[in-house]
Length: 352
Image (cartoon, rainbow, N blue to C red):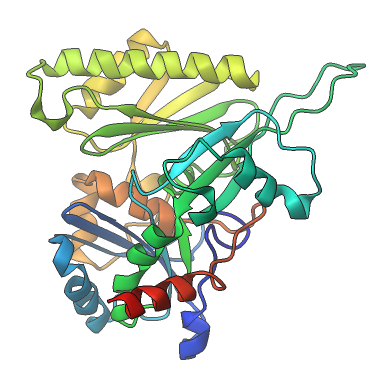
């Protein structure tokens, strides 16, 4: 997510003397599903080596990870774990507190008091600096410094990582879906217009907008008909999603004054073609389905699951792929959890 890792680069890999990573492995674990993607550096595109996905009970995540590890799936790979929706919160801050850089996280923690559902002292906090349009020449107004603050309970992070530790797997990076998703657009697409990605899970849709390699905007929207409470026709669902996207992009335009979004790519969804068509009609925006071969080399992969995913990609795999495509050369400050996470894990074991 950042120059090093949001919520830190964990220390277990160094402690176990693991070799230098030759691949990056992105993994997502949601309620009942596990998806993992292994990518190796390559030119002109990274090589998609392997894809694994399975249905897994919450109490069987550990055995599933041990089975993958036993098959060499994690061998010499840097592991990027994506927190599931609901395991973290994002809060927009119009301008950063006027404090020195080294005091910024403490100032943000104080500012979040009352905004979180738990004490901010229990939170691991990080932030993303969002780009903004330059002020007009001659303006005396202070330069805005908008932030997207990310907060997650340390106990929740510890629980997410515990199964990996128990399976003898080192987790290098803990990231969030917004940043994994923004890895799916090539960084060299230019700075004259913004690009966007719209992904889906069982209950929501996640819209991200970026300019070049910088995340500019993110919004998670409830998915019409989620939970089986409605019997809407697919066309009606697509229209409602398109209207939500249109309104979100209007908010983005008002808040940032950045270049307009020229193209939106849609992740897997049963009605994705209908949704893309509805977005083109309602938002007057070029919308197309995400193509696996645009960001990774699938032609040279020998894994059978890769060819299956190319033609029938699941929503969870999209974020796992984004995690595996993580690019580290980004400006930002990070929170290291090597100093706090082991203490939480240790207290959990003592309490057990």
